[in-house]
Image (cartoon, rainbow, N blue to C red; front, side, top):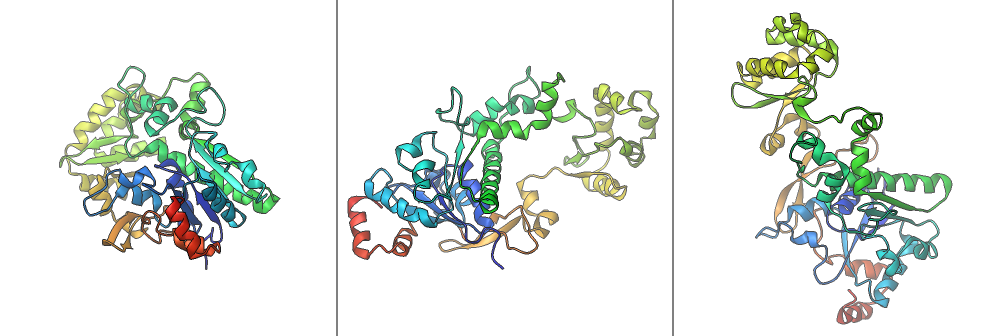
Length: 393
């Protein structure tokens, strides 16, 4: 059985993280993603954190499964190669500043003249309209302007906190991939090609829809951690390891007190109702901190899980890699790299019952598939050599 997006070809001009992770997700679903790179150094992501053995986790995580095509799109012959690909291409993606693809002659109107069913998709920083539409943006700016740094840091009076891992880029990529999938579905259902635009800023607001919706109705901005809910946070146990609680439903309070051996907390009028537990959060946190420090984490986890209470360990990466639940679902997996042998990678978070999903190959070398793609377009070897001599590819 082919993958869900088998037969969909994506011409991918994206660089760095937001766009490339979106097309990685689509490639895991079966799409053929041709990564278009400039011929001399390619995506700058190839060099970010490059190891002495040639392994670059940044580039590998964001470009597995793809084929690399090197073309100088500033040249007439380079654009002609792109135009020759368009009739058999479904989606063209970019994360340049708005207007860049138009300068290259690769905007939606130009490509739709060749293939009326083409879908073009842009992952911008700030969206296609407004005073900052044409400004550059990166992950840290998306987090800053979207409000999550303040919320994560603890509120307007605290130091803003940046979330590592390119959170704005990664979330933006998921929204970008969703928009592309919706456009593919719309084309199949309604016969229309179109342009899709998502942004780092818009994706950050969508991520915080709950908090922002409350704020727009006049509610005080919620902040993370114990300052919001003492039963929806983490505590240090006797062995120095941390446990996370997810007791959002008030019905769990009596059972929780019983498991902790703290029926006195259940009887305490200050904590009898949810509003009291949050209103007297500092006092409750102090009681729970002292209680959790009396037993090691494994013991607390066993007791809480036996009572059906939502909880889990706070894992570092080493613990994540050995987490049985992660292993069982193949959320981490391996691929065979032609240069380094078996390497560990992050698998797909999506599972489907009928169509296969998941990584297939490590990221390509720069220009690895250029000749293969040009030969498929009926270019001759003489043409390829001429392109190389002229710096077109």
